[in-house]
Length: 149
Image (cartoon, rainbow, N blue to C red; front, side, top):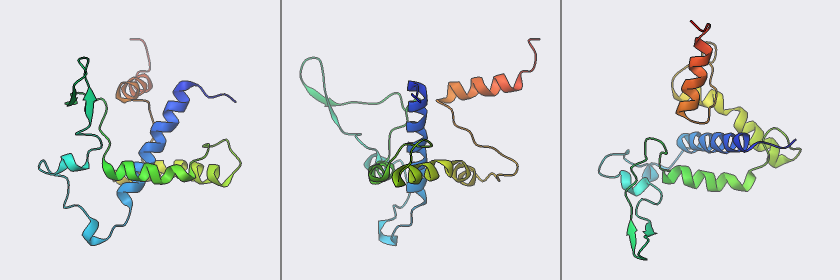
């Protein structure tokens, strides 16, 4: 069965989200734990924040990202976890291999991890994934609106 581009993008976003939660929940040695993200130290955790970009005139400059609300920059612990997990990545929900089973199990467990992360119990709340905030708000509005009035 061929996946649509939207389905492929959804799976990639869900996998990265799942890996982010995995990275956040990992046990680390006391000396490795950051003191916490603060305004003074956050830059050292943002992947590519000082990356030089070639401009039209050929010069290179670090750029300022004004699109953080739409596309959150990756943090180094998340990037490290994504890289580590890629060694075991397999097709989610449609393969017959150890890697596919591993990825499918990780993916299927993400909803409960998200609920735990936000302090919601599984008996009263459901976690579902959407492509972006606009898509999520549209789905929510469509579910809540029961008539055309």
